[in-house]
Amino acid sequence: MSDTPKHIRTPLSRVRGLGAAHSGTQHFWRQRLTAVANIPLTIAVIVIFIMLLGRNQAAVAQIIGSPVVAVIMLLFVISVTTHMRIGMQVVIEDYVHDEIAKFVLIMANTFFAIAIALTSIYGILKLSFGL
Amino acid sequence: MAATKAPAARPLSPHLQIYKPTLTMTMSIVHRITGVGNYFGTLLLAWWFIAAASPSSYAKFEWFAGSIIGRIILFGYTWSVIHHMLGGIRHLIWDTGRGLGPIEREWLAAANLIGSIAITVLLWIFGLLAMGGPL
Image (cartoon, rainbow over all chains, first blue to last red; front, side):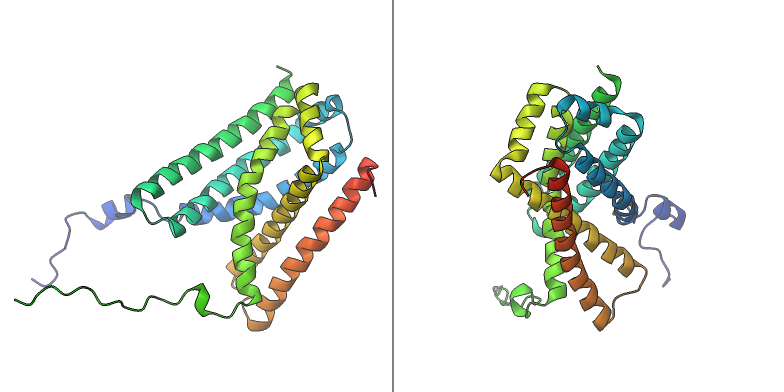
């Protein structure tokens, strides 16, 4: 028989598991989604930062902790850290070909992105709730 | 049975050193470098958020931001963010299939570079004026 299948998984099973790579276009799409989100958020953060220049710590803390500014900052942090984690992973995959080094660097990349995200979120929430 | 021969040194696919540098190529490389720069620049951002909670830690951040080194780093970070954002908009335009022609892509690359420098300088002039700083 010429049409003997080379594997025993059904086409539906392969589609659900996204094949041997186990992932599809999520990174590609998420990178564009966060890129679009980053545009207005980054502009807003730059405007807020300029507004805060030359003010004392109490004023800065009060403004960052105010509801609208805090939410903009939180959205910015989540979008930016997601975007940068995916971007750095692509850079690592492009240049690091040693399997173990690549594995370690991709892990370190994830740790860095999460650490930056949570440090920033903690700082913003602390200013919001005055803990 | 034939003896195993060492693999011939086959030519690899041409890489950077083969091509004459072009503006679009340079902007592509700069987009990646600014992306990596922005990645590490988030350390400053996280520091700023944490420092804002107390007067003494904020004073340390302000000392850094006001120092010569701090200003150079922050100026570079501003440019890097703006350049990567404009480069990203260029990529989003390309994602729609537009702007890839020989004239458009050169124009976009030039606009990316000139735009990022102009916006960064304007932001800093505006920022220093807002601070009543030395300008």
